[in-house]
Length: 266
Ligand code: MG
Image (cartoon, rainbow, N blue to C red; front, side, top):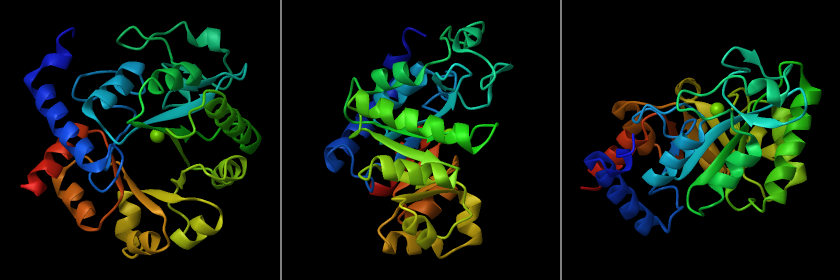
């Protein structure tokens, strides 16, 4: 594990991503659409949503690193995909109860605060914060939404954090709390025009949603919305989406996406 940043593959990827960063000023999405889904965990065998996977996405030079946030019983926002952390239900457990388990690399479940503090040590890779819908319902989802936005503001992270969510009202609350925030809707059940009308700055739909609604990518781009797609892990789909000029592609295969981008430039 200690040598993983020095592998030939990583040196190649880092060189590639540096080239993209130089071309793009570090953030122009058309040259660097890569969003690491739950961090860049797969190639290196890291736990999803771990601080290590966030660091790896930063090393690779991804445009963004996505992560999922839930609220514990004692109101601590934590980073994890599922509503349970290795079998311990998050919403009905205290943060200290969640410390009974560890990720496979020895990390504890990251708090949102610790995760943001790590990500804000740099200024290139955006932190794509997904507000998870609370199992108990809307009230707690909106509580988490406000807490997350407040935390980003208190850590002075507004320029580096973008938000995504499945709960339509949560995104509207983000827009109200921070009118300058980038907020994209995930659920795929609203037209681009409806998302824009509600205050969203982007749509971030499953690839199949765009296949079923073949005008939506162009419709969204014409409306000035950003377009992101989840979760795209093979070259054929990546090429299809690049041809349609999407802004971002959320993937478990960040390294592959960089390779495809490089191939297309030759
Ligand atoms: Mg997510």
